[in-house]
Amino acid sequence: MKRVLPVALILILTPVITNIAQNSIIEAQYEYVAAVYAGDDVPTHLLIQVKGSYLPVHGCPQRSWAHSKYPITDERTKAWMTIALASFLGRQSVSVKTQGCTTDGFPVLIGIQVQDTYSPPPQICPEGQRRCPDGSCVPKDLPCPCPAGQHFCPNLEPPRCVPTTQKCPPPP
Image (cartoon, rainbow, N blue to C red; front, side):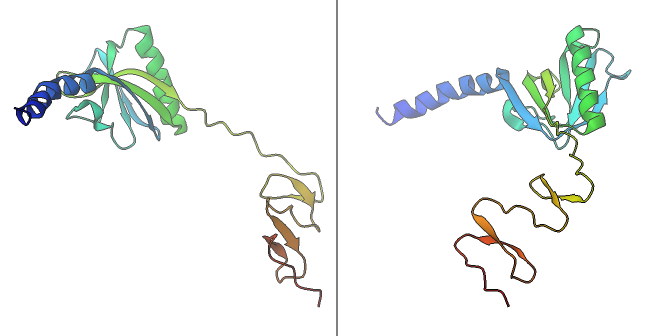
């Protein structure tokens, strides 16, 4: 009887676990939105495609597009379309929330947000200076500061930063 009990539990729990995965809210990161569709053949919902395909976590057989949970006339769906278009046009990464599958097997879109990929504009160095890899500006005739754990060896050819454990050669 001890050997039958674990098998019976697996048989009872498997449909419950599958149902939980199909209906749970999943949030995943994608490189960017590859396409946005709101056409005549799907007149009531927004369709969003990400680069690659949606994760198979819900068990949806169709992972190329996500269908909005709400109709295109809903304010939430209109906001999602704006966000998706921003990602599409700017190739910005997105976080997409899905929950379960549509009756025809597509993930159901319940949220989308563009990820913060802002980087400040590059600093312009003053006249007679150049930009170093760390972003600082130094006079054109001086070396850039070395990264942590390194020091500058002017006698090497070419002069460069080396680990602090390495000694610089003497001048020629």
